[in-house]
Length: 298
Ligand code: PHE
Ligand code: CO
Image (cartoon, rainbow, N blue to C red; front, top):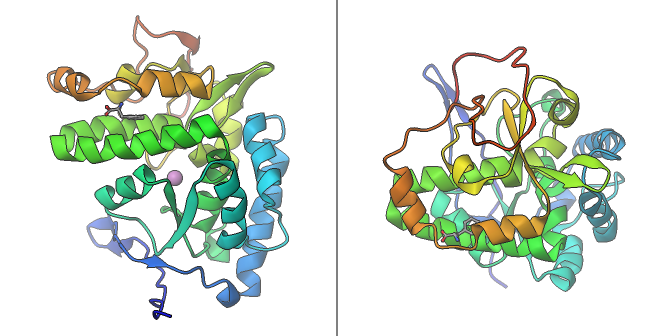
């Protein structure tokens, strides 16, 4: 047997110039026996709290998939056990990582149906907010929809598209990153009984799970891939705009064409501020803008 690297906990560096993300490339075995009672308690608290909020708010596929994979509050799930369910459903595999990956590594994993999951969970003092993705965000937020065949294919196609965009250049990559942000992280979906959440950044946040659906402040706009690729976003406040899909199939269909000519076209167009509504938008709800910061879109 080859020796497993000792997993580290890689977090942002906080310097006098602000936070600096640190990237790690290693794949690590989940050190499950090393989780403390506090770690399991953090998982249990967050799991129970979010499930309570998400019934009737997250899309049915998401909630059903969590149950089907056997995610429960009782203990931090074992990647190996989730992988048995995931492998059978869609052929995806979870791999343990120490923190954020360099972009190309991340895309390459997705393109091969490997989803990187941070092995460590936030500390008790970080329970309500943590800047970088931890095990709770990755496992609770991202992994369930990998059980859905269409969404699973979308994630793989996104990875392949990322490898390509990386080769085209930083602007193409920025366009594609916005699409990930407004779908995989912060997407809403229209279900038979109303708007629901599917984005991992929303379902793993108590505040945003309520804000995204119930607040009058944000815009809710019909999904439009090219429009999204021009749209800036927020990283440390709730989103000013959410984009609404009708189905996961719509995501697949809209992102199927080769983006190369789209990237070329977008290169000469200005980006759209996070909170703007355009005449051409299919507006579901126009936001009041209450509480929005004027600056800070990225
Ligand atoms: N079709 C896109 C391209 O050619 C790739 C892609 C697929 C991007 C799915 C996002 C989501 O680049
Ligand atoms: Co995420």
